[in-house]
Length: 515
Picture 1 (tube, helix red, strand yellow):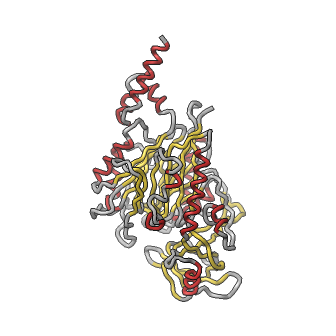
Picture 2: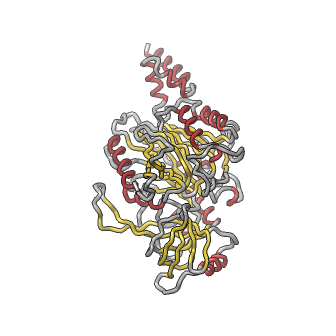
Picture 3: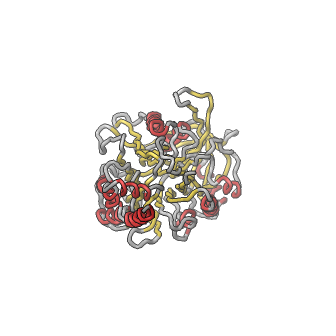
């Protein structure tokens, strides 16, 4: 009799395992036996993703949702990256309706997408013309234009973890008021409630294009334990749906600065459920050159926040001259139009979980792209550069980008060879300055992950300020000396920072089976 029942269970398991997600959810409610078998089918974490370049928003949403929900899955979280032309509010509403209003969802405007096309099942990397920083904010704008349309959607099921989207906001009537400390407290409180620990397993963070994500991420880097993985896009525009932190947007009272998808261990996890782990690999693309400088004068200009600064060569009374920097750069690199950045070293104080100041100053690096200059002044994107900060110049370097991509590939290959855990999904956050137009070959940014895990679902976003911190990141300060190419390869990325430039960040999700 037992063998007959087992045979029936196997047949039911085979049938139920082929159902689409919505039908599967209904089937699990039929009886205790069906629920037990459905729970066995969903005993492991999984990721589903799909990309669509359909110029119709309705058509694109239909294609990607039909693909990701074509097999049994219970959405614990979802991330969608769309082009601005789709209209953020409309896209978020449609996706929320298809995935369920209780599913933590982030709908994000990025610079482009990567993934497998839902219909053609082909690997694609697509970059879009980005939105006009001087124009209306996409959160208040409607869709327009018939070009540069598309989206990528990823849906995750992670038993043993609790997931929610926690927003960072500031009052409209006080744009200078920072609520980052409160944001960190909300993340820690939520994590402690569901896991008993203050530090989550991972954070996937999305920042608004007008927010100072360097400052936000520096505070988070110091306030959240080093065992927490952090990845994301620091320079787009988004809307989010949360289970516990609901704020309706557009709002007359608040502005959104960032949102974090928080992955916290479930203290009530069944012993039959294994562990989901998060692994980060980095591919850098910047090389330092020239001496270190010290900022002596700072001026922030315009609503789109550019910083105009002057500086002295450290240890000398020699003023920085922009024309001399450009001349030196052109003598250093073969590329006649290299992107130029400054890597600014900031001193920050540590605070304990209780808010008590610890008498220790940590140093971190923020990158700002140079957009112009004249004489003793240079103009860079973003804010946060202060009098007394020191910086090095960096330039984008193709050889370094290719070399560190191989480093990322090797790190993921070692993970692939692990006998203890199995990779079931991935996310990629790559700088918008990369892609086929930079490397000269297609699908170069997806290569480190897709070449190692060709049958594993993943999704990617082209960013303007890629966020990346692995659980093994150190907060050591950067060296003032110029590093060799081989040293950069060994480090995987330039000096310690959480918001990178001209790089690619790879997040691999793996499953460790229970004992």
